Length: 136
Image (cartoon, rainbow, N blue to C red; front, side):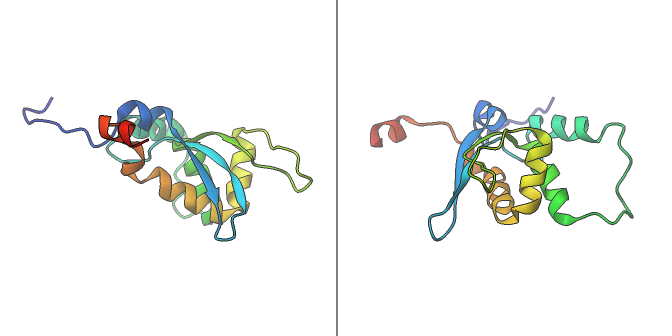
């Protein structure tokens, strides 16, 4: 335990349970809503999820891996725990599960990048203040 005062950079509960984020493009196309936990190297939940994901798995170093798939696996392992509004080409909703999410984010790299940027931004996981509540 540190003898120095520790400051909290984010709301721990929000960071762990997640915040809903809607992905739209410049033309207003809606790609879905994603429940995202914070991805931060200093967050305990991120460290624990990363440790669980890599435990007993061989190191990928030297393997030819698709960057889009690596990002997709990262998102599903560390951040995204649910979605709404993700649909198949015929308009039917896609059930959220690990395999579907990895496939979706691997194909939809625009969405993966937007979700990753959101999940890494600590400002999206701040506690509501009395001022914020009054403004709304």
